[in-house]
Image (cartoon, rainbow, N blue to C red):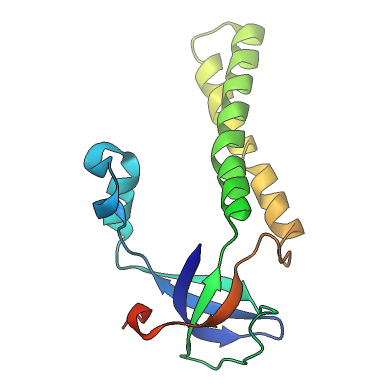
Length: 152
């Protein structure tokens, strides 16, 4: 997946890139039938900052305000989605069942579910710290952005 953005800071091994959120729901078959569309409408036009590693394919050094293209590996997106969405859901269901089995009260299952949901995000935090510089999972610069992709 190739994205484009503007360099807002430079590090030794990476750039901080500003991207503008856009709504891709117009081309989706589900249109307004999914929750992602509502989130996209809310966040559309907002800027995001992310750390993009300098790529081996791009030997060009970029400066502040340069427009660049970067690639996010599909495997990184799938792994991230699993950790961020699935692990908290599994932890929520397991702790809700355990709490209900142990205490058998009307408040046990919802409290266990809330605790599980929170605990489920711990692996995401740990993986973020451990894999911060992994070229396999991080966005990597592939070159300058095409003129048609430049955001103003």
